[in-house]
Image (cartoon, rainbow, N blue to C red; front, side):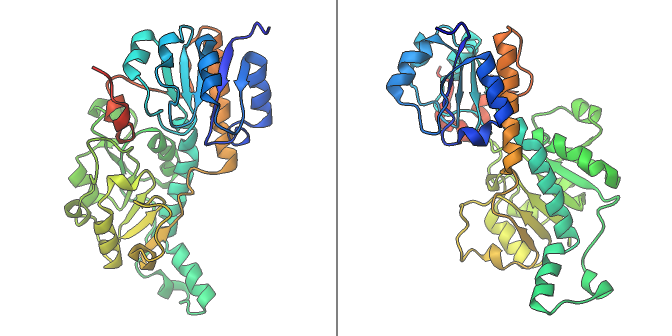
Length: 345
């Protein structure tokens, strides 16, 4: 029998090759005894047999194993590779027992931030519209084709949310010399100022920013945070970039205002996916649309595996994990995706 600690690797719906590059998979096997590690869901009877001996469990989106925590006395960490935190997990028991619950969310920050910047430039300079016009043979040339476009350089940029994506996006914006304002009710003004950004109320941020990036995670407090009234405050010709979740925006109002030409939008996430073919946002000339592609680059997904392996190595050595995002007792029940995983009183 191996002397290495047991780690259950059950990443379905992701594939093993999607999460782990060859070198990281080899490293994983060198530091722990991997149980399961297949693309199909682990049979529950197998999970119930091995989990009491496991040091850690790698899951994707959902904790499928019920109350097995009660018998998993050696368990030290649950690592979720979906990008969020696992649903249907007893977080209260995890916190009480010192079981770390870790999310691969940081692995998605760089690729989503890169896409957000690209979509902002595509919208502000009408790059996609110019391409469509060229292909249709009805393009305008030089100055005539730049009516309504603007330079990003020096423009005020607003971030709604200052989590992992925003912190990856900020250095990409810095070369443009843009003052960055941030609205994030989970962070104090002093902390935001220490990060080189200006804390600002939501109404003022929306009204004064030339490019607005919607980067906030869905919570029980921010459904349709960008209401119709707030969307109407956006400057004429400004750009709204939506790359976190459509949940945060009144999407019907957004669609109407973009169709009316009030402002432009670059959108990677939608209320219903796939987006219905008859949805009116598809007809909006002022919209740059993307099919939820910002966080799904193959080489970007391998960063998940690198982070998982790095943190598992730390846990095996009795050290705190550093790379994945740890669940916090003060915040975990405020994520909208975890309504079914409330702390048990």
